[in-house]
Image (cartoon, rainbow, N blue to C red; front, side):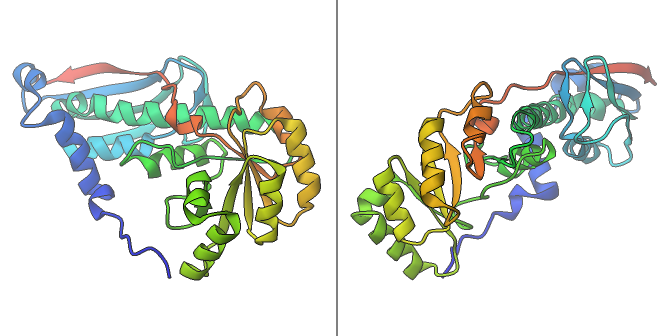
Length: 287
């Protein structure tokens, strides 16, 4: 038995873009409509003001094209490219009102996604050579999860699970509700026999219980690297080991060298440092 939840189609495609714009534009862009004639055309450029990984250009284009279906879009670099401050990312031209009205919505998306991709790339590079995968979590802004996770992938990270439906993650409150790890695992197996199961553990006693229950994944929660290394020896390949909690760029290499299979970081998406991008108007015709 699997989840009966069906994603809202309005969170995808043109309907989603319309919701983004409705939030910002509402009944109209008062400033632009007052200043810029409806027939005016404009050319603009996006310039990076930070060093980092580019992501979100496709989503930005969706925003502008929703306002001007004939807008011309000329990327100067690609998704996933590393750029330095001062690099031109894209040049575009179209109806001036569309160029100005869509500016903030498009920039917000690209700056957030580029920030996530840049953080993911830094973590991936920090563990290079260890064979450890960097994973994201479900700590995302509601409505933006697929974009947050796309950005992690663009940065070289992996998407652990998309939602509550594609992996059974048994955490401390589930264990308490079920009366123990064995009971919690048994309940999940009976309810959804085709779903992989992961158990969060904080000590070796819980680790041994999870192993005895035959789970596919075990999350080592807030363990120091030395204890993680001991956990790796105890597990001996019988389950995939995920390190999580209190992991930062400064200590991620030590965590990776413990021998775990992957490291998940909520901060990739819940504490985003936006990548700074500036939109500059290059020309305005018909004003």
